[in-house]
Length: 262
Length: 279
Picture 1 (cartoon, each protein chain N blue to C red):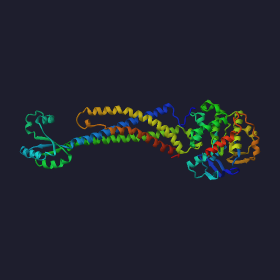
Picture 2 (picture 1 turned 180 degrees about the horizontal axis):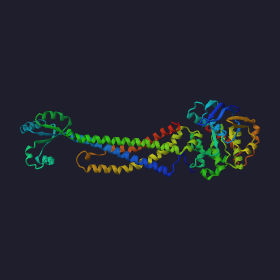
Picture 3 (picture 1 turned 30 degrees about the vertical axis):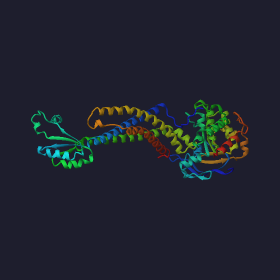
Picture 4 (picture 1 turned 90 degrees about the horizontal axis):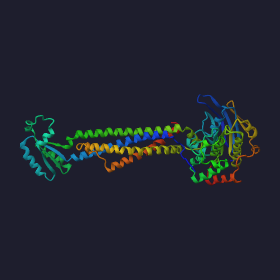
């Protein structure tokens, strides 16, 4: 999958219900394993771009291809199948308040019909990974903003998505928690080769992590910087709780393989 | 480990309201169905009760001997012959005979016969109708039967209306739950849930509400049904007195709430998929 185009936009335009353009004539290709930061002013269309990629929004013009598949005439079931290879994280966490942290994280696995035993193993490991091992039985409202965002990330990464979209995931977090979260994304990108597009307008993050940038401005999209191995190496070290096992990521990866997911 | 696998949750007020509405509808449905079944049983019994009976009214006294001969000749077909006494006729005609005494002279001689088989009725009618007025009890009581059928029709209509109301109510409940849980629907969409999974989640919650409501509705309706039957039986005679529920009727009444739950779950699936596909 390395270097294969996983996201392809060709002359894509989209508009609001009142007909006003949000994005016009957007074309780009994104390769597998890339890590991009999506930036632009508030209301420029960052979220819309992510929603277009995630098939939560239909373009008014142009063609979107995901994993080489044209998305124009996908049925609702086709889209949900496509979502099995993708995940999205929002600034406002999108957690279900009456479900525990465990059940929130388990939701994508339940949707995919995993057995309870496998769900328990995977959720426990992922919770450990995001440093929330002790909070399985806690409800989201009992957690801090940073912890809730980590739950939201855990729910996204538990299915080991090929594409991870994150819409201002650090928007509600302090620098410390924002840094922890970035580390998680970097590890995902490095270990699993997950293609990540992270929308942010946090200048500190942009200065600290030298990722290639996608800028949304005046209804158009432009690219700056190279997506190289070197860029991810510049990331700061993980300051949060360390996974117990040194080979944790390969362990979790092995588990996914055993299950036959992806 | 605490686990709540249901994505949709209703606060107590919402689920109590929905359970109460469904309970009332189930109560009415069981009651209406119970009345339908008991009237049907009553009409069938009523019919069976009278189809072997006939009244023979002899207006020409000279024919009595011939009639008596016909009775004797067909004794193998007749279960019983009873002459209706003058006092019985007087009591039956009391509302129309004010002073009574003189009109007694004009009263005809009447017999009530009961045949062994209802299939012999036509033969006996042909034999006797040349000598006397022959009136089967079935045709004499036709107005009562017709009233019974009409009541049955009305009750069936009410029952159908209740079923439609249940369908509309369940559809509304599903729609309401979906509207109340837009956030959860969005999340489910994000995590890759297909329509079938979401509909199943909705079915679980509506199924729970319906099952509880149907149990309550059924348990409430039983004493009312027994009360209606008890009141009808107190009439002692007539169609009302024949209203009854057999074992199979009770079985059908138990099945009804189960069918309502199944129906609710089915409607929920249809409604949810309709909502999700934006129709």
